[in-house]
Amino acid sequence: MPEPHLNGAYYGPSIPPPSKTYHRPGHGGGGGGCCCNPFTCCCSCIFNCICTCIFQILCTLLVIIAVVGFICWLVLRPNKVNFHISDASLTQFDFSTRNNTLYYDLHLNISIRNPNKRIGIYYDSIEARAMYHGQNFSIVKPDPFYQGHKNTTDLNLVFTGQDSVQLGSEYNVEKDSGVYQIGLRLYMRIRFKFGWIKTKKIKPMIMCDLKVPFKGNGTFERTQCNLDW
Figure: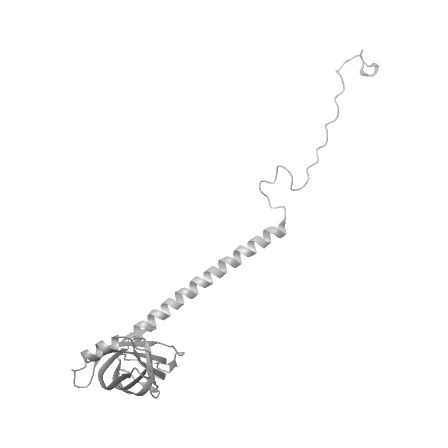
């Protein structure tokens, strides 16, 4: 039935008001990936920036080190120092089975060649060990010295005395042949000098495997030694 105050017209049932919808920040749609926490976004940007800067600094340092190293190599052109046993004399090498004592008299001449034009070498200490089939039987320590550019230095090492060792059948075999297989090890502390710059001490070892004839049983052959850094 039409309402009296509507002048007899009927417009249907009343329409209820629309319900209100509430959106909580950070929940649901909207925003299109917008950062709702400015502090988190700021920290992430700072971290990425720091990592990028550190990476660029490291790359720059590596390039600088490589360039400096290449320039030093071009200027210095370092060459390997050569060690030779130029002469050897063995006048006594007797082993007593009664008390396991070796009596020896061995003279070695070492030739050290520094072929470098701009590099000098300080030999701060040298310990020379004479060995026979893996056993040390004598140690001598030459005086320290400096070796200049393109220089050859000769060291005379004298091993004489006696020592208690345990030898096997190889001694009798080599005694009959008149040639003994004797080893020499040089334990060194050296420094390099480039102009006014001196490096820290390094500890190379020189290994020489020799075939030394007993007196009157032949001539010693010049022998190349090996350098172990």
